[in-house]
Image (cartoon, rainbow over all chains, first blue to last red; front, side, top):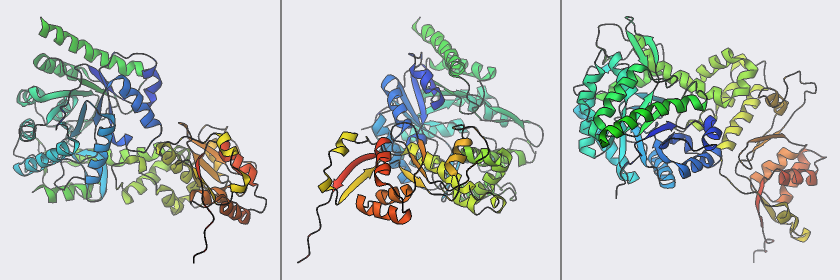
Length: 285
Length: 260
């Protein structure tokens, strides 16, 4: 029995404990909150008290950052069991993870690291997604990464790789529009071309966040997915482009570092709500 | 094959002396140093930040620059073994104790132990304290074989230095100033409800609680505490635990029968 991912098609926010008092002080114009699974794997205390309260009032997305689905090595069964316990306890509307790896051998690197896109890795990632979905008893969403490098052995464009994983496993996709912009800029590619290849009909959640701007060895722009700033205008434009094609889709604002006051984060979410609302009424008309 | 490329990638993340691994590319002919450095930086800075968040008083005592340099050495030598970052740094205090540049600050590792215990208390299982009336109704003739169950968050850190005072002064709990009475302090760290609390224990209190946490009877714990400190005050220590809401249950063991 598999539970489908089903977040409401409204704006949501990545929950930060520093905002808890502000959030519960009023009814927020939000469809859902998202949390990083690994922060809620302790036995008790304030994290579970806060998550229980949020879960009672809003839809919930549990977003894993530590499963290392893109690794050629087997999944960490103990970690998968922890994810299952968390999903069983909170019954989230959605569970998602990344097309990336974060562990190798005994070490956890705490970052979303890149993989080549080949028939070999496609088979491996698909096996891992199958294992996650079978274990959790629910559909998962797989997110496109921000990347700073490519692999000489890659043979499949990223958007087509994600489409193939979705075809083989039935997983949904989480489209991070900031990641599309970051990766396209870093690889001298066109974000609109990427989106034209992307199977938008499989997208069940969108992420929007800020990035940092650096330069590579040749002085070319090197954007870093840092979630430390507002969403930039070109990403809002890409987002509107996507929503015009998909209709309203659950959209998350991610602001994980240099976190501002709650009203500033909420303003970003309201901007997403406005774009979703326009798309919703256009569809209805 | 990705596996060998991934192994080289992983090894180079924590070792800046290693060259950028083979098999990587970009859309131009430019060298890949800064691109690979973005991953190295995410890994190392992310973990250093995680330690800074877990050990804020330790960081305040040595200063941010020193702390981050020390944390960087720790991160490269002891990267996380689990995706549960809430446990990362459990062995950082032991590392500090053996880190030569902090030899002049023998109290630093103990302050870090106190901070590590605070995170464990924060995430520990919840449990409801017994009401004082429930404990008061224990009859004195049933005290033999009595064991108290303490809150799952309760931990003791013993020190030859005033670690509770140092922690309080460097965490904003108390005004920063010279420590006038430099003497050993044992800390009790616990989270009976939603707030993590830190207390300095009275004499013998640490030995007493350590025994209770190990599952010893009240009598055995009191005996151990008296051996540790001759003026150990059982009533005061017990009242302290009850008042803090740290006794969550009890069990009374029938006296053992002689084996036939």
